[in-house]
Length: 187
Image 1 (tube, rainbow, N blue to C red):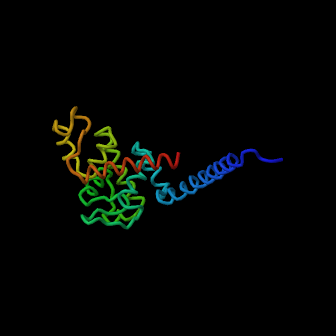
Image 2 (cartoon, rainbow, N blue to C red):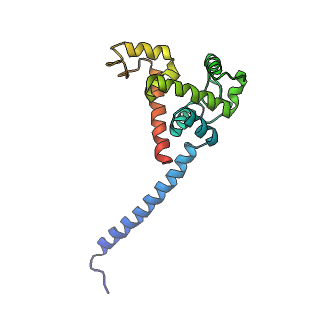
């Protein structure tokens, strides 16, 4: 039997091969993405995220953006651990939790996640918005409160139309986009 249209057959076979390669690439990319956006400290993330009414993907995104899951991370301003807790913030949370650990405890994954989730739970309750909570975590509640009162940055006093600190604006975008990646990868 002779094939009447060998060009059509080649095109058809090429499409099949490309389709198979695309599927393999997507599957391979997914595993690469999972290695870049891992789930670590799951027991602590799940426990303290639930305790503070946060999504797991949100907490993973914060940890990824703050420390890339390095429990011994220290920022140039002295923030420590997975969720990068500052000394004054540590003292404030420690008082609210009536805890007895010292600041070195922020290098312990469970304690750091517990404190970071407690703070984010408080910020989410106060601002009712992940974007505002992240902005407050990065720039401070006082700054976010001022921005919400300023018509240049907020039209309704409840949401920000602009964030005047470029580093905070970039950070908020990074955390929210990273959260979306976690949601898509681990649904």
